[in-house]
Image (cartoon, rainbow, N blue to C red; front, side):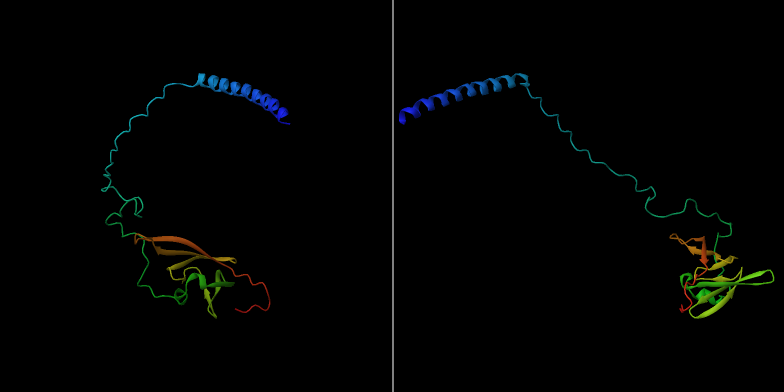
Length: 174
């Protein structure tokens, strides 16, 4: 048996030596295409600190008006603080509900519910806590012009609508 193992081992080793030659040839051939010299890294530029000189410029994140109001222009828009308040001005607009309309002659009135009380309003009345002047009453809504203060403290107008409340059931009680 030992006689048989020695020739088999020689044949196997002989096969391995031919594969080793192929491996050496492959490594030699693959080195031919590689560059021999590696270029050095570029020089690092020294850090130059940036000095911010925009302290005199306006802050872009601070709200401000584009132009200041001119003197003698009447001071711009402002609510009439001396006017007597109407009952619906005690409620925020979100708590008021338009529940219907009435027509009497040429005037159209809206029925507005606040808490459990029903009020009749028309064009020219005030409602809501933002000096809301009623500009129009239709069968479907009440249009208001409110005067509110912006972040700069100036007064601005905005339009609001109080829609007609649609009741869905006969037994609804609120």
